[in-house]
Image (cartoon, rainbow, N blue to C red; front, side):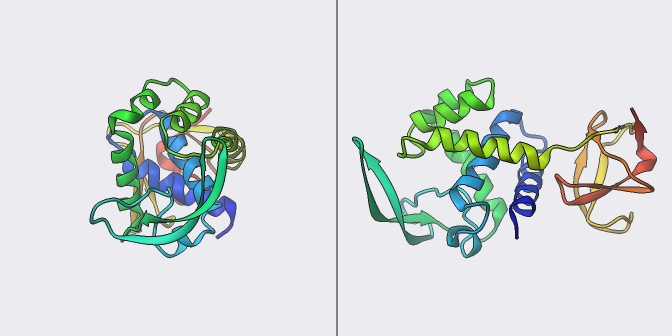
Length: 209
């Protein structure tokens, strides 16, 4: 899986999880960018072998795997072996990430209004010890936006229900997620591919703009 495929896969998974939940867009992007940074865009063993895209430390009786990591304390960085959470599914990992962010120590992250501020607060609140963590997140953010950027030429224009995004260009295929009315997309022919979700939508329910 290359960088583009990983970003689109994670974006789709995060959007699907957050559907119906009151999670700001910039916090979703924080989740996405942290997963890219923590796993090297999905190439690390913690992601490939353990469904663990966020580098969350394991506590209590949580299933874990051990891996070497760099910790920086009082300006001194050294390599240590730590226990990280492992998950049965990617959805379980995303759920655990947002549960972690609900801890009181991360309240300042939720009070931010944009990605740049959130990237600073997540470091200040102790998610990572690296002094360059925020800068690294901002670099990833720019790259992720380049991958997700699409020249939109239409919007979803359904009458009532949101528009289904399907795994294949067919009404018989699996529904991956849904798009609410007004969502910007790039339409093609009868069906349009939506890179963010790695799925397809029927153009019967879109309107060119």
